[in-house]
Image 1 (cartoon, helix red, strand yellow):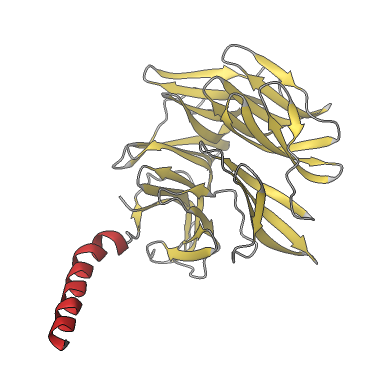
Image 2 (cartoon, rainbow, N blue to C red):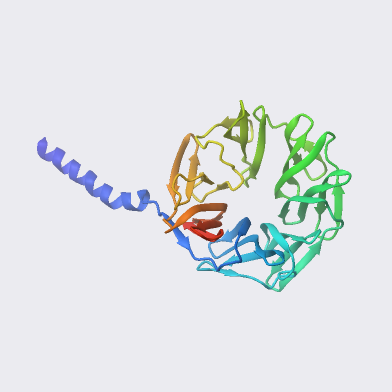
Length: 349
């Protein structure tokens, strides 16, 4: 009997040695060099089509004002692109998204706004039909794009169908549209400030309506992630006695479920669904020289750190994107005695 037990134990150890390395080893975060900009710099957004193409946007502080920034990842390295219309003029770049085979990015240019488009044939631009006081957010999918903001008449939702712009009506009582995202041309989501507090709106291809999302009391919304599977995740903060705590709400097609992962008052604005199926987002780090990321997988929340950066006093990932089997982060790093400049990190790959 003892001999049989020894054989079984040896087989288990052998199988573990063969199987575990492939299934249990998790690649760590690594630093990616980014060509310098004129500090201080601000990162707006990051989007990836796959492991071989990603774009990051933002702006730098030039001597005579802000200048837009566009960086491209080719699967090996980051490079700065200065060939887009208005690259050398005052302005800044906002959200960036892939639409079919093209990359689209929102462009704040002086007092006007527009969309930059980059295809295999080069750059082009789509101007907005009117100037708004503020341009709050932008979303684009094949066949549609939206820009939300405000003018002297109140909240505005501008819709582009590929050939022309129209102003869309929104429900009464909405004072300000804070953000927008879309799964398709007939399925878009927006979060807004209304007379009753924060509310979630949904576009069904014909009209904007209150989505009747049962948000926690005294809460706001940072982001909404609509996924191809039909799942929708809402992230935001709830305030209790002046203290904020992060919440997540998930729609499974039948009902909404609310959880409060141990994230403190972390903003979920940069939250993405990672290649492992879990939610990933940057959080406030307790190490001055390293970034910190949270992984939320159902009821389980774990944390990981970026690579150590010598003499850094603040490492701030600002945006995350799934790039194939990897995660890309883009943000800023501040070194002792210097203004914040660009940083990037990758998990996996």
